[in-house]
Image (cartoon, rainbow, N blue to C red; front, side, top):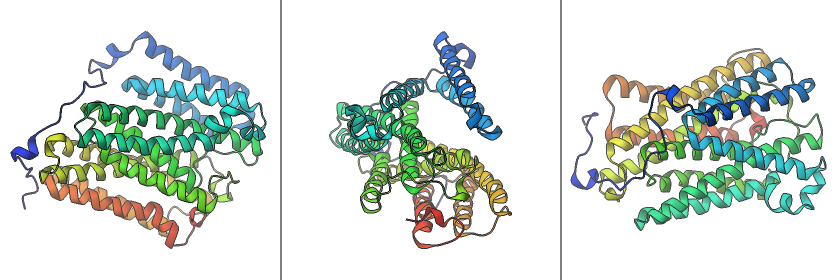
Length: 396
């Protein structure tokens, strides 16, 4: 089979109508308006406030992570305009929740807005329900050729992301209400990282949706998010996983603040590429062909998702090795989690090598990306379920 071949059948080449892109392609400096600079100033002011009022609670590394986050968020907001409104909305809802709590965790069960909307558990439940509804509306939009259905799916996804990130921010605050020795960033267990995975995957999809001006891929990408939400709900009911627990000693490190998010940007990107590969294979076979983007667009999204995921997964692996050296005295111990992380890395390194050196395209690339999701899922979840090792604190 010619790896560079992409089907050009009439059915496969049809493309659904697209909406206008959300991006401004003018030179970078020309795009920066007064609002852009005010947005950056607000981020700097927020970081400054945290340094002044919570300096005693942060060590050198915590401050470095926070200060490094400010330019990263500013650049994201400048490049992707909808992200600015999202960040501002998350900040407003999180601060509103903190104000309603008044330093008393018991108010989560008595204050109306906390009980039904803004406590961490309520917000994450809203996120879960909205992601499922968004999936349904995206499929209605795809199958019924309904722009309205797809638009509703898009809006529901944005609101789900808002509620999810608000839930994580409030959960962070709630952990400190339990006790200063309990407080930690909420990326420490399977419950929290499944929320993070869902949010990152959704954000990545929304970015590509705006960039390519098509909503037709939402039906596919939201499926994997809904699956994650389904696991999250089961995990909460069966294991009471939503309860905030103190960190185990191995996780009491500032490395967690950067290693875990980088890791899950990788996982989210790989999951997105796999679901886009499903759309590619369906279109190539003429299934819903006239309602999906062109094969060239699908191939490009698949490639860019894997490239972004590989970059962040590489960074996360390096950070994990540095963390391991600090925690366990060695950079690499062939722990099952480390071994499977290496397998995931080698899989996508080989995919990118074949793409760049041999021109990998078409069905072979799509099937490979889809198979990669199985490998990634086992590395993410299967190792925690079936294997033991230094990462056993992440077991189900």
